[in-house]
Length: 260
Image (cartoon, rainbow, N blue to C red; front, side):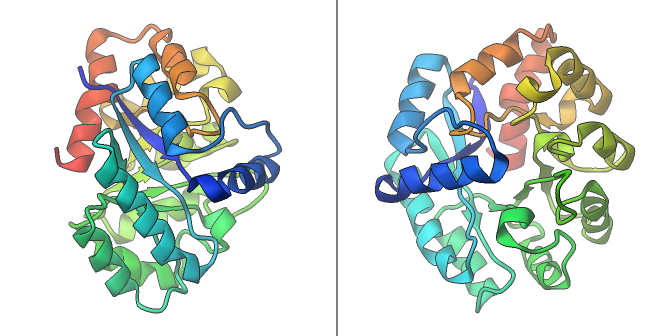
């Protein structure tokens, strides 16, 4: 079985320390690692994770090009990495950004409405979603009790308005509000990952949510460098899921989303 971690952030070595510090400050939590591709790959080799979907987000429109170039380069250098690009609603030419992402081998787009400063269902993003349909899956941060930008209700609007857009709602569709997310997303058509969840809601509730949504909708993610991927995989394997559920989540679903 090929094990995929679908949610990992990496940064260029020269800015990794500052980026990791910024993320830790935003969430108010200690970070588990340094955020470099080298560290991530070493953890994967020693921890039983074969492939990582890696990404970063652009907090400013002019950061999009350099971030996407970095992620694409790392994916070319390391076959263990699958790159997702980023985009910003205020970028000058979103069509060109998406075309360049596809041409450079990026397999999807990651957004974080809170840190990027827009709402998930913002009108500017709708034009971007329309261009992504059938071409690039969207991975979005979802749910934060402190903000409304990525509230699950906003994700529902996007899902209804773009039913043919492949969407992954991170953190069970509701980081810090996973039970609220259930009310909105249990019957919707979207993927979910379990990143930054197991240590917050506990293993029993994690298993309950996976079973509630169904393993066929779930992806495993560590949210590196916030968490250690090997430790997160160990937690996941301790949930008591069936072999079929484990293989579906760790291997089959990622392959389906990525078209592998």
